[in-house]
Length: 123
Image: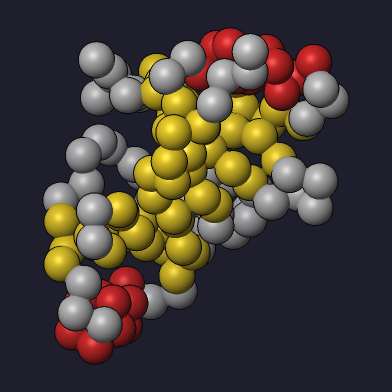
């Protein structure tokens, strides 16, 4: 049986101006700004949209970097899921690695080259 994705964890949006983005997402849209759970060298901020997160990161020079636009799905067994996807010919652009908060993440691309993060949170 295939490893299933559980739900959308977050969406990351590349921004140009952090102050303008804070005003738009916080003041105008009414989202609640929250602390970032782990270190990312890219400047930015996070907001809650219901019970999901929106990660705003200042646009990097290289749009293929992790700070680029992407969506993230959570799964129970990321190693199994990456193996299944790789066997099916999906392009793996970042093998599973563990962040400083214990979350394991990997990156894939869809057929159009859109970046998708897969993650497995610690138990």
